[in-house]
Length: 331
Image (cartoon, rainbow, N blue to C red; front, side, top):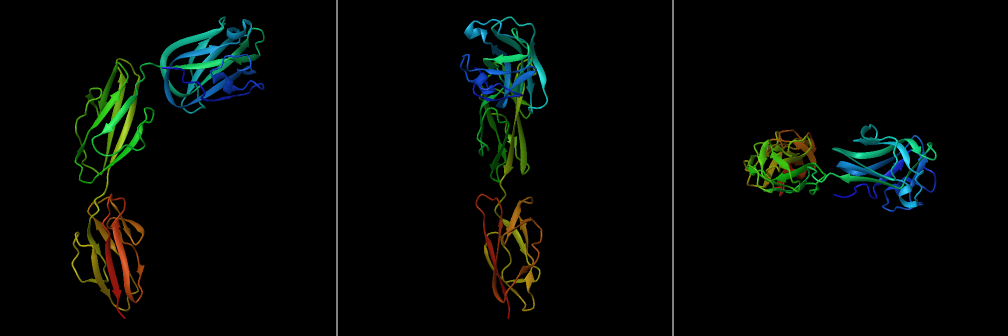
């Protein structure tokens, strides 16, 4: 699937100018375009995302200049999830080749490094790499596409992004997903049930305000797999079912379909607290700019003599309904 090391971020424990580590992944094979360092030494690559790798290539000076004594003798490929803790993937001892190409069981890391313990045949204390290559496994267990029957994935789908959210209306009762993979020998399971490649999954009930969907892609008869997670969040209903203002007298009984009200308080009432009950129990409500849980008191809202407009609506609703209560403090 190509050399994924090409032009990736490269670093080293040290280098001899002008032979910097980025030149080992430039794709240019030239005597001046290589990394040179001391032993023990290493070149580390940050691939940006985890990749499944099953081949490692090192090109030495001998491949371009015919200097067979300018080949490294002992070196190891290591992988890491965090760039700090390393696991050996492959190793070469007593090398005699100007280009070494090693295949191994596919492994998944974001960081890889070539660690040199014995340098050039002509000088064991010096390391030199013309090209550091990593080949992606042809049958990597990635999705190439993921679509939902409702809502939009956030962030936008990318095969090496594994965690997503999607929002749907409050009255959405079910959802399904359509996963697609380009891996030839993969099994896909959605919430534990097998789904054919590029086919619609089973309907998944949205009984709660938050539902987690897992999509697992596994290369058959191996432990090579990736797991994608989509958290489906129901947008709260925009309706308020009740607004309670203990010290105020509402002129009209509250009705979810009525948005404008008047209420009166005595002259000695200098503040009121407001409690809004949302139709979606877990919703966040906005009372005069203050975010509260459904059923939570706003605390005192100061009143002046005359009109005091208080607005209430459900935060994060797709199309919020704004309820306004004009609290009139009598003179």
